[in-house]
View 1 (cartoon, rainbow, N blue to C red):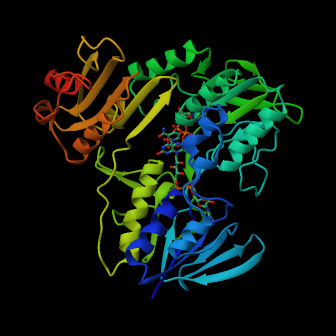
View 2 (cartoon, rainbow, N blue to C red):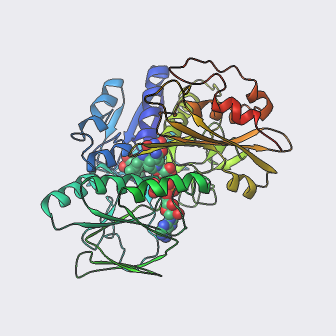
Length: 460
Ligand SMILES: Cc1cc2nc3c(=O)[nH]c(=O)nc-3n(C[C@H](O)[C@H](O)[C@H](O)COP(=O)(O)OP(=O)(O)OC[C@H]3O[C@@H](n4cnc5c(N)ncnc54)[C@H](O)[C@@H]3O)c2cc1C
Ligand SMILES: NC(=O)C1=CN([C@@H]2O[C@H](COP(=O)(O)OP(=O)(O)OC[C@H]3O[C@@H](n4cnc5c(N)ncnc54)[C@H](O)[C@@H]3O)[C@@H](O)[C@H]2O)C=CC1
């Protein structure tokens, strides 16, 4: 029997533990430590819960200490791992947050995830040592854990005076929460340091669709502004940027994640943003130590290099790869890499993207070009539920290989992006895509559908 210790049991850890036990349960003892009291909270449901689009949080969990134990793991919750002795192969844990405990391992898997970034803003501080990102100023909220969303909801319920909410960061969490607060009738302002929203995922004309969508719903946008201070007498009263001052009752900070890799303690090689640098087998620079999910790097097929992309989808897949490598008999499974495929739905606007935007492709040194197309989803004779779709494909002019794609519509166009994800992974050219077999049925699409048409329209 080999002993595998897994630190962190959220999306990456849970996927990994279940896979080890399902595939190689007879060969491995699995011991899991998590510092939180719950596991598997789907952050994607946070905005739906806050905005009352779902009735409660119960369905936002898909695993528990009990379900992992039923699968055969030994699970300790509320138990932070405080340090690791890599020479002796031991982890040092505070069981139940109280009792010191040492656990030996043959293989160690870090699934310690990420923490919200705290930018240098005067007045924005986390209570020292607090693991739930509680701010010293009342009504300044971080949004990562189940407990964070519960706290926001409890505060909104208990204080109807919280009427004006500022969301800092117009990335995925920021725009989702802006919608949620607006649905509750709050006066919402979204602040971002760059002059647009969703800049990491879309080129300007797609971000503009989302900007208009937010503004059409009465959400105020304060883009291109740097937050300098959050002020108030014990609780939030003002948000001050380099351009304006906003009188607000609550501020939510959502400016991205930082990998949680303190346990590496300077002994494990890190990526430029501090993530554990792993190879395609999820191995770190120390033998028998693996890292998965938000604490680790991924191999990004669009840039052909290592990258950092914090997504639950990557967490699950990297967890599966590590499970097969750490749990098996020397089997070697390599990740196929990722494209950073992602999607968002705000009110009825749906946007999906994968790979590189034009701006990013140029930044990464590609001789990039784009081809774009806008059309109805279905033939004109379908008079109802037939919306316009906008598509943009980014490709490399030299190799002709597809580098990225963005699609936006009121239609559910989400499935289309998987085709582009695979195309980037498999290095499909724009010419090959133009002749790819795409079925036609008027209930779904057009014979000359927008994917084919965009690819056929590639000029450069
Ligand atoms: C509001 C919100 C919405 C999101 N929506 C989406 C979405 O729609 N789609 C998507 O793909 N992604 C989404 N994400 C991102 C996604 O949640 C993360 O990528 C995912 O949680 C990463 O999983 P993970 O298991 O690697 O890390 P984490 O979720 O960060 O989990 C890390 C775990 O490690 C534990 N841990 C950390 N340090 C220690 C220690 N020293 N000892 C013991 N335990 C420790 C923590 O308690 C935690 O349980 C969203 C995130 C948020 C916050
Ligand atoms: N639908 C999905 O797939 C979702 C995915 N996630 C993932 O969770 C992670 C965290 O999400 P987010 O926090 O929204 O990160 P993000 O990376 O999506 O967005 C961060 C935003 O904050 C802005 N910003 C950075 N520093 C700032 C500062 N000092 N002041 C003001 N604005 C600043 C950036 O310009 C950016 O618009 C991301 O990896 C995201 O992809 C989160 C929610 C939904």
